[in-house]
Image 1: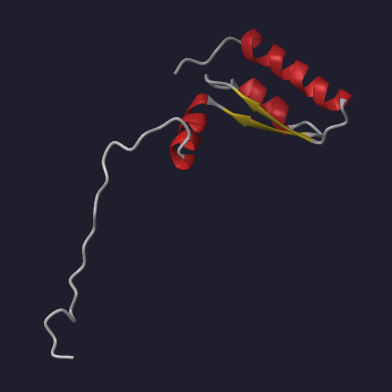
Image 2: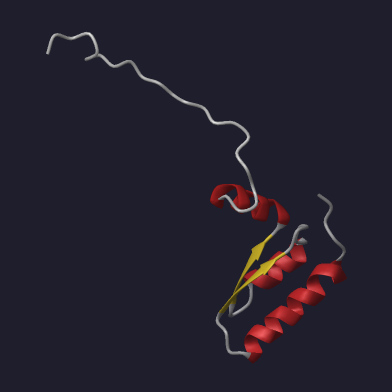
Length: 89
């Protein structure tokens, strides 16, 4: 996955941070389907208000973990031996 150029991530992130501040929000989640550059990560981590960054890889993992827009490919059954099956009790 390619890292987008500075403007394509930082400008929307700056606008989002400003919107949070304008609404006096203390937390926000910023999602991209690509990746965050190091500058964006540093910016978000140094803000007074918390902004959680979710990139495309994390988003895909959340979709799998929570079953959003995914379908099972295969299901495996794990069996154990029932030791009481042949007992006289």
